Length: 327
Image (cartoon, rainbow, N blue to C red; front, side, top):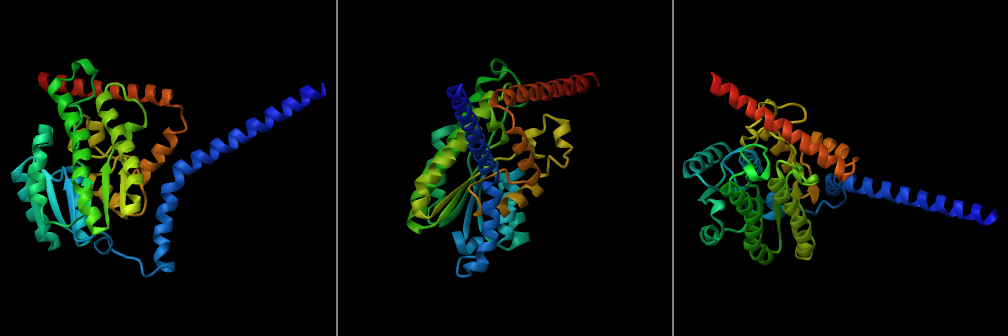
């Protein structure tokens, strides 16, 4: 009887310890970013000798991919607002020229544009590297990305679209980072910002390839952050949820925006604020809250919820197309 009591006490203690440990890990995972931001905001009061502006900390030039629309465009404008010269890389020359002219006129900084189609794969990177020669890049924002035209089962997605998603979402973040690291090491400073997606939080049925590529971005970012930390090069992984951008135009509901679905301008302003303050962030307060709530559920449950959400968005798109054809 005494032995059974001792075993029960031991088991109870073990369960208690595991519960406390699991709670501590969960709290750390979800609040380390907030703590890092608070620490960064307080640091100037205790270490006033540290750089206080992005230009002081990283240098005068930033490179942003996918910079003519959505988050990339607004991110470039926010950096220019803080006095950084910007290099914009995107596919369409006319849009690049337009955005560069707008930024130069409004923020009185230097700009440069590079027309490159990341869906072409390996062939575009030598051109980009030649164009960046001599520019001391202190900030690299790997923002360019591609999604399905609308959520759908894998076998229905055209092969060309799948290859584009792989080349753009995985290839660009890998090869642009590979290209820039040696230059940042020579400078002894820099930061690489990789834009992932809330789609990486769990396997995502009906957006399977897109979600998987964004999971790659997160794991890649956290890995090279460890590699580069000793060289005074920072890496930040940004994980937005729904934002009002052209990527989500398949859904009228998303494009209407809401408290939980900010505009690209509001999102970029918020996430640039976190630059250099935390290694991983959702970039926006309501996205952080959604992310926290979702992580309370097991991955299998999140996967089922994500699949149902994507099926609903798919049906919304198909219904809209049907109505338009009937008009």
